[in-house]
Amino acid sequence: MILEVVDAGFTYPGGSSIFSDISFSIQTGEVLCILGPNGIGKSTLIRCLANLNRLCSGSIHLCGKDMVKIKPVDIARKIGYVPQAHEIVFPFSVRDFVLMGRAPHLPAFSSPGKEDYRKAEEKIDLVGIRKIAENPVNEISGGEYQLAVIARALTQDPSLLLLDEPTSHLDFGNQIRVLEIIDKLVETGLSVIMSSHFPDHAFLSSNNVAIMQYGSFMAYGLAEDVVTEENLRKTYGVDVSITYSPDVGRHVCVPHRSGTCRCHEKEHPPCRGTPAVTVIAGGRG
Image 1 (cartoon, one colour):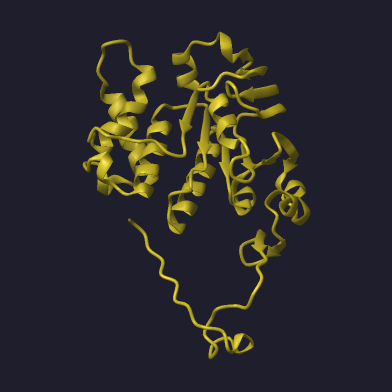
Image 2: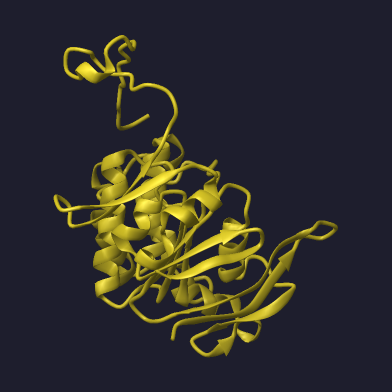
């Protein structure tokens, strides 16, 4: 067991409870996907798991040891953290930014060695940002920056990777690539806890799923047991159909919407009379 959370609770000073009585564990080589609406406390929970926020109640055990008794540098050697947003002002190159992930493994006042550079280059290639390795990190797109942050976290060589909505700034192609990278890393023994707004991600790459609502987990378990039409309707307030797609070999979530389909009437006769709308998709920017 890499991480065990027991009756965890957190409240910001002077505020109301964010979450309480949350318990779960994750084994080596497992993926836990946490779903839930905006503002429900997913990011705060992940920050607590990263030891950036201290629990108000309960405990977190990392590799069998209470996290409050572990030195921050030792936690950084075990846990990699990718936040939703992070502001960079100084124009480090992407390569140097990724190399910073080796900091927990370096003695004080020492410089990175050949092995540290090798690991950074390896992760740059892994997430596919070789073409921008020399670019200033504060001048790349939001999606490219997100990939650089993931590469930096992986350069730490963590046992557990915490990802707070890792695909939120990525285009469709890079979303799938990140999920594929997670699958490859899990095969090597890495454990992953990730939050997401996309129920499909739970089917794509997780062992277990937790749905967070009203300050606790309303459901926890295997994706096919937790990600149900009823649970998603209760969580997000919209109707969803979950169907099995033989083309991709997994379940998919299809949200319902009111109104008529906006498509070209020649291609879709049932939608006759509705206006045509062109959807423009792009990559960088």
